[in-house]
Length: 192
Image (cartoon, rainbow, N blue to C red; front, side, top):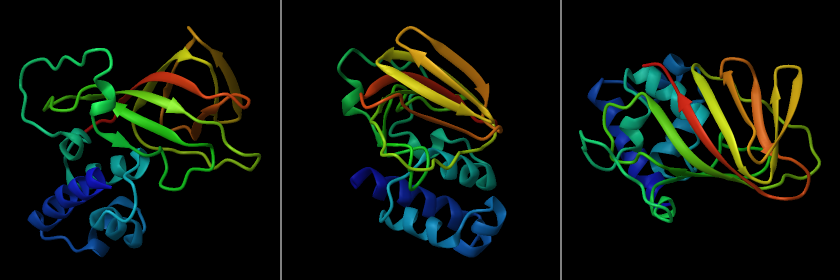
């Protein structure tokens, strides 16, 4: 949980610099105050959808919480190095669509507008799946295995080599197709 504590510390610093209480921020971003407090303390692994809402409410880009360094030039991530980069646990704080392990491909690049990730998608159990919604756009390219993307009322099954580009404001969820894990390249754009 070291990354969660580092991200939580950045979140606390940003919130306090604006003179906001946890309750104030929760109201601004339409998130539960308990979730924000848990993110700040590192008790909950950071997840993409709430972080996007929180950073928008704070007036910063998502990368502000995820960046380690202040690199203004290009960031090169060599094969095998992505595992050494920050890991974000799942799209939702408690995902029932399976575990999504995120490996950032642009850690350290400041002032970026896109968030590229390698994501290992682990299969979920047989249960109802809650969908995620947030501002922005997403591009997903399946590298290995198969995934299903629930997008609004549609279900798209994608195999290795397939891709999908969609508006994130439409309720959606990405999950492994069947019982086998998959690996995807995902690029998330969240407007500032």
